[in-house]
Every structure is written in C-alpha cells, then in structure tokens.
Length: 189
Image (cartoon, rainbow, N blue to C red; front, side, top):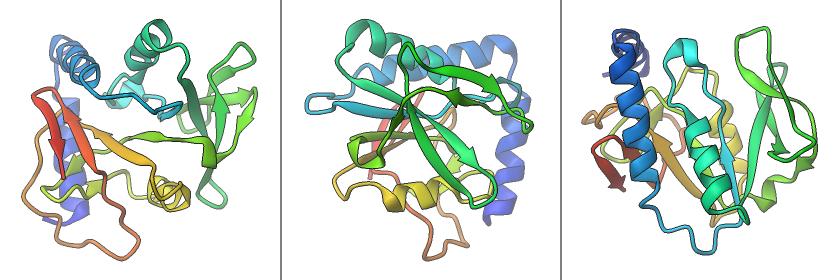
C-alpha cells in the first residue's frame, strides 16, 4: 500500500480506539520501552504527543526516565514549519511547553541542545513496514531530522499496531528506524 493509503487507514484505527484501549496501549508501550538497553545512552529525543490524534503518550516514558534514569538528558523538538526542520530543547527546569497553532505541544523557551548530543530518537509514526520504514503525517520532519543525526544514533519507532508487509512508494529521503516498539514487543530490523 502507498503512504497515503496507510496514513488514512491508521489514522482511522487510532481514532476508533476507546479510551481504555488507548490507555492500555500506552502502558504496554512503556513496559516494552523499559526493556531497552540504555547503557551508553546519555541523551534521548522524545516527540511530544498530540493526545487528540491518539499519538503514543511519551510523557509516560519521560516520567519513567526522569525517575529511573535521571542522568539521561531528555530533549523535545520544536518544529519550524517554514523550512520543515526541528530544534531541540532540554527537558529541564528552564523548559516551558505550550500548544502551537497546529495543536502540537512544543517548547516555547528553555535550553537548546545540539543535535550531535542525541544518542537515541523516539520516532513518531502512523504505520511501519517489515524493513523499518515508516509512514508519518507526510511533512518529512523526522526524515530530515534523522538525516542530520550522528551516524551512530539509534532510531526507535513507537506504534500501537504491528508492521505492514510493505510501503510501496518509498523514496530516497525515507529513513528507516532500527527498532519499533509495539504493545506486543520490540521489533528489530
């Protein structure tokens, strides 16, 4: 299937989740995340969830990291819709979050961190295939961002649903994740 077809299907699947299913999937994602080996990781980039779109609740992961791995720096993105790039803010006492005009929670002030400091990126997605390629909302923010990260940075998707067999319209700008966390486990590519 094409990205557009998968986007439509998986947005609908998310929208059909009951609150209990949504909450259960989020807790299952957290339990799977807790199984990751985080040795050698000093900085993790987490996307901020748009709850109205039923995105995975990364605040659960943020809170768990703060409690159990306080030495790991957490960073959140701020999107520039003019050039489809992102900058990163540290999740510290200086961080201030607000919801932007597109309904996306993002930093409005705080301490900027360089992309080179990021060891692991939790990547948002709507669907992914058996080779680790993903379908997002179609703006390419994360593909551009991943291309700018260090060569040894880890990319891990978060998905409520299992992989599809194949995304039929990949292009040279698409970047795969190395792993994807689902409520059922961690898929490696």
